[in-house]
Image 1 (tube, rainbow, N blue to C red):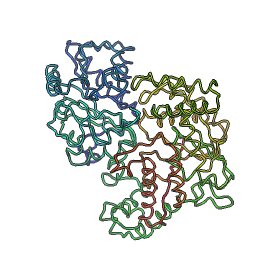
Image 2 (cartoon, rainbow, N blue to C red; image 1 turned 45 degrees about the vertical axis):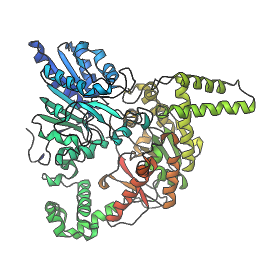
Image 3 (cartoon, helix red, strand yellow; image 1 turned 30 degrees about the vertical axis):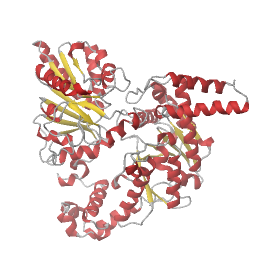
Image 4 (cartoon, helix red, strand yellow; image 1 turned 120 degrees about the horizontal axis):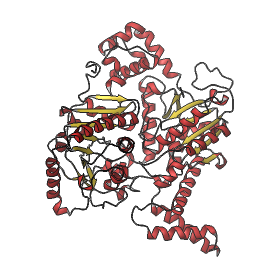
Length: 636
């Protein structure tokens, strides 16, 4: 039984699992147990299924159990949550095709038992079609187990903000943030369907049992609001609080904003570790709107921190201690300051210069997360190598590839040299793109030229950060070249390429990202490949002397207690960083003009770095233009 006090802020029971794999296996086991029970009486098991990357681990486990343990799915009836409207079932981004590839093609489930909303229904017939979908669920006896994910707007299915608890299956207009999140799959926000068919919140609430899954740091804030906030139509997932038989499964990253993890002293007695003390004092400073050094004993006792004060007070001494700890994370020398004491610096002074290896899952992850620090490392004489782990070609729109190919052909015509291999390739690409069906898989030629575009953008960005082309590597890990978004599969080849890179360079510093990402992302797959490679090489002497630093992703920010090194940026360095990001022209995701400033990727990066500087300022430390934060990493 769960400790009620420990969960007292949670209005939906939440279980934190070690990994998404563990969570998916747990749910798959529950589903299979029910199927076995129902199969004994030849009764149907009715499942409500979700699409996207979140539940794919469940589907893989169901397939394994079917093939290895012989479990039959012939008595299973399924109802999918949603489908984009006005796309066919064969469209590469249709949820119908996704479910066939990820689950149904591998089971013995009868086709007649599979129910997925039809995105091609005539507009005038959608109301009647949606009523029929509801009736089919009722005729099947209702949904026994419903699997859900949660979107960044708090949507479940495609129930966007504003959906009521009584809503049923219907045609809905997609939220701008939902379309933005789908833009990469559709190669541009302008290609994302404006509408979708979805089960309603009320339809979902009729299910006998509900599991909601959340993986990765990007889901943390919205998950905490759904679990601990007041139920509101503005956040549809929060309406699940009324269900009597629901459980949330989240990994550590997705659960990180829950009170019991973020502010555990408010729910239970805690052992006051250094990190937890820093977190509590920083929170108290923000909550009291006071710099750390102005906090009083009364501030601690009135905000639930009397125990901290008793063990580590008085406030005056505690304030100075934490102020100094946070101050010592600040450094203008991310590679260490030679001939200086290491005692109060996050990075050691020697050796100098260092070999600093920066891993970027996709071109532009590096400049977004640490563009200013790259420039600082180069200026301070360190040998900086940037390694782009994937080509990034999946994220290049066809129009950009056509433009590049046309340029090659036009240049050849100017020089009267139209029969080179490069020109033939460019002409072939133009022909293939001209004949390509919408959203069809790119040919190797097209992916090649798209990869060259990303490579060119990355090189220019690195040059702006002070890095010459000879210090830029492109690994093109096989998992990416063989796969597509949400459906990557790692292999030993990926690990071997990274092991070769590490052994060749033997860095003194290693910078990377992706440890807190949703498992299906490029960033998470690159992190897993890196970790496997480092574990294989863990006995190598150079690893013992390598400091490993995590930099943030585009959609994430570090909490103050997580930061072990903070690199301040001057106004000029911040401008330089933005210029580096701006070079990635194919990745520009413009919002509507009225809201453009807050949605461009370079503006997001700028605002994030400014917010971190403001946080340090509010704690009473020096005021800086912007700060890039890093978290120390250990393999153990």
